[in-house]
Image (cartoon, rainbow, N blue to C red):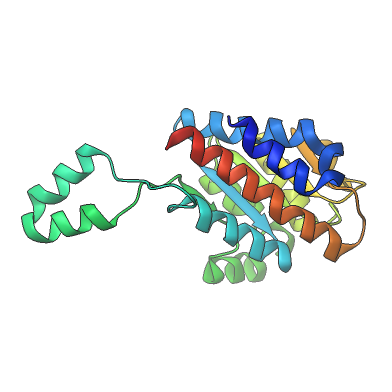
Length: 210
């Protein structure tokens, strides 16, 4: 893990020094997850939903570094269609697998209608999650019931849980392996702190693999 990336974060956002150990642990946990061929799941509401989608966008394709596909995929593409396969191989980028649980509107509406709206993320964690995977749960208050239920389900299935939340940590803090509680209780300020934290995690992870 690149210490330089972490130092840059704390030099730009000195208030986040209070979260230093948890941010370092979060970077290591995501790196460990991917090193063991795990999957990253994410969820949040409102602005935190957008943050979950944002993180997936940084992980599933190049963030700051070039990510060429591996030789096996390149050769496989060319063997299926030499001309088009060569083009695809040049354009595709290696991905770090991540799923935003906010992205499945038909499934979310079905869970809300047929089961319980608070279980929209928990049901997906139950379906996707495997021991060794990782959930990043984002809640500015830490008290959103659908997030808390997702975290409880993740722990029951053996996932590591990183919580991005505000100063108190709310109800979900007790269930998180790594609660990152930023130094504010104001929703806009909490969200402003979350962005540089998850960008730092994405940088650290990308640097580790590419």
